[in-house]
Image 1 (cartoon, rainbow, N blue to C red):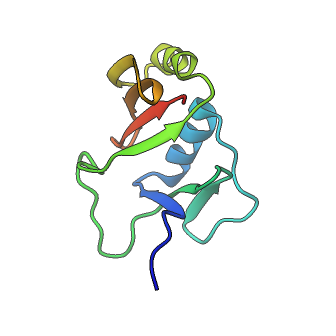
Image 2: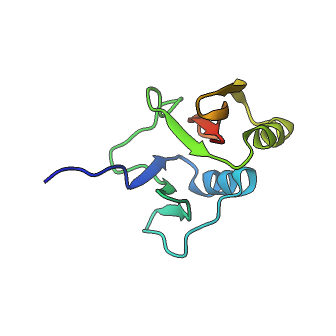
Length: 119
C-alpha cells in the first residue's frame, strides 16, 4: 500500500475563533458544512484546510510552523497582498513573479508564514 498524496492540512492554533475569523475575513475562505470537534474546516479545493486547537500535549512555540512551507492558491495574488497590507497583516516576503505566478508570503495571527501564489 502506498500514500497517494496530501489530503488534509490543519494548523494548530492558540485562538481557534481568531484564526478562523482571519482566514474568513482576510482570505475569503468559507467554512465547510461540517467540522470535527475542536476544529474549523474550510471548503478549499482540492485539499481541505483547517485550523484546530492544539492536540493534547502540544505546546505551540512563539513562531509555530518553522520549517514548514504552506502555499495557498489565489485568483489574484497581488490584489490579496494589497488588501492584507492595507489591513496591517505582516508581509514576510513582498510579491515577485516566478514559476508559480505572482507570489508573496505573510504571517497569520498565530505566526505561521503562508505563501500565496496565483498560477
